[in-house]
Image (cartoon, rainbow, N blue to C red):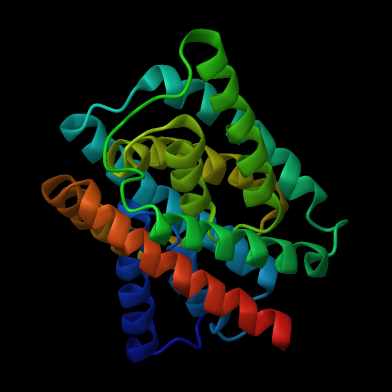
Length: 257
């Protein structure tokens, strides 16, 4: 734990971790809250903030993934290949992160998010029920391709990874929002693990800080997963639209700045 942190700062970090865990458990995108909070810690470097954010995030995604598994029973035949390729993609993306300028990606991601938000709002029936577009090898192949693509993005940049996982599962594979969020948690656990495989050997993780924020993230993940299961796909869809809107505002501000 950095020595310059007072009790108020620790309390705010804990609150940010809990909020991020809740958002991640419902629909993804908790990094919008947690990463900026970590970046405000005195003396922390961006790489340390990213690595510590992954440690806290994996604690939350582990408990929310387990909660979804027990209460929703996500299709592991989809989650397994998607998670495996996402982990490999995250390791590769983290290794490439220093070589590819972020300015190249941010405007593209912003356009994609605006399109996703418009598509979701204009098609209210999307994600209400599961209607898979493919079966067998085509379905599993598409899941694996989505996994490696989004995993690589998570290693490269990261904001909104859980959100992209949910929308790809809903819009491409044809899942309803609730089972999509359940599968996304398993895959997001793998992407966090992949990034940590790269960051830990470099000593970038601040373990004390990460564990404190991670416990709060874990609590938020548990509460968020139970709430999503109780309220169903309609609730997840509303939170999804709100989180995508927040992502658009955040990335739009970055582009203008």
